[in-house]
Length: 140
Image: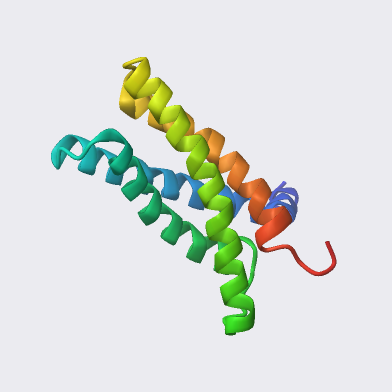
């Protein structure tokens, strides 16, 4: 039984780590958003963007080093990865902002619940883009 579990963990290591760091990224995103929106009184969309910036910086480092095992820190590798990562995240930021605008500003829904739902969608899109575009290995 333990052997089978270890095999599954090894087989799905990237997805498991992405899930763990995705949850942590989501917590950071929601906490920073709540801090900005609720405590500091910053408007909805600027709060969402600030939360996004902090979460993306955390996500890049954890995705690069732990999820996709891209340990090469040479500028020729690091910079293109960072640019592609940021471009992919900007695309999903658009999705996030659209959901927040419609859900909070237009429909006056509960901002934290809508933010959490938006994060689920964004996490899935981010994994696909990171796997297929940003940290794509030469043999893929």
